[in-house]
Length: 291
Image 1 (cartoon, rainbow, N blue to C red):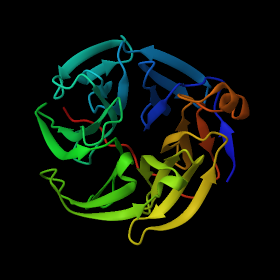
Image 2: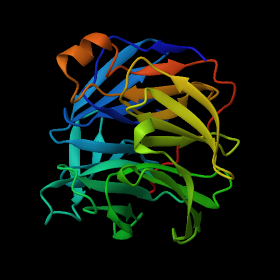
Image 3: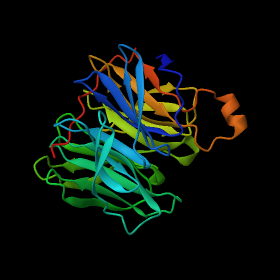
Image 4: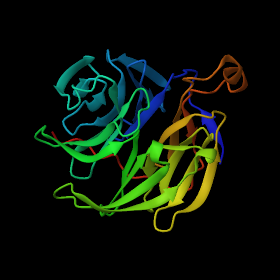
């Protein structure tokens, strides 16, 4: 499978890619720069929208615009007016934390997790923002909350705590949002990288970005078998999502944060957005926030 560089822009820490099927565009964030990015493949138009805060994750809203999670909590964001509307911050008492990855579930809730900006273990949590804007804690004692995905039949929830080095699977109840019966789906030893962002295809296979290993892997969650690997010219691959008219293109974000000058010289494409077109499978539409 051959990757392509989407455009010339380099993100410091590109993350949280989501395909907007209605507009036929890709959205993603640059966390430390506090930016939302928009890209239309048909025209090549790339726009950058500042949010004024470190933004960890975005998702689409059914009513239009975006829902997001940042260093100062949950918010709504209107791209057209570039206005950010604060909702709530469940970690206002933890100024050393920020939100990281997040996605909407099949029922229209927004899930997002936190992490310590100093990488202190156990400081993060996984939260769920309900449609009525109430917030519940789904998981605690998290190192670095990261990739999330729901199975196509909505019976399973998959989750990554990067510092735990594994991908977890849970039974998932759509009506209530409850998760239960945790099991380890896949272990990734530190020597082979760190599991980061994640998406799922229409066959129920997980696609996992492996930070530090220059690759995205395709994994069967039923048995933990790695079915495929795609390698990129950037060590810090961060996340991935399916896009395109038929959801058969894989978009992959990356980062250049923390790299030395020598490392940057050896990987000049670090921080770029990549696309793989000959993916030979398709994804599922991104769920939208119903609140």
